[in-house]
Image (cartoon, rainbow, N blue to C red; front, side, top):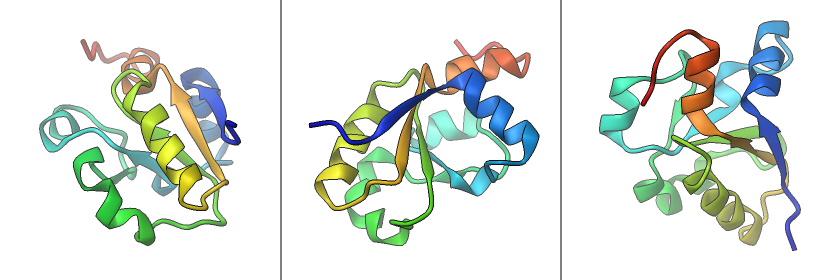
Length: 108
């Protein structure tokens, strides 16, 4: 049973602009080369390949916005977090590719 929610890139961009989400609440699970190419300033890089070992560094109480390139890996990470007792996280549907478009950057 899915307990986490999806949020659109538009919704996340609005929340960031309004100051209702801090950039450090955004967890980017893409790998290093993807991160270096383009990422949201202030977001936290926790690559999917290292996620299991870094999970304990993430807050269970604070809302976290899980982000990947297009929203596929972030779903897997959200499932993993749920299985490990995390419930205050949201999947960013469409991923960084959609956020990049909103910010005027062509990601793909």
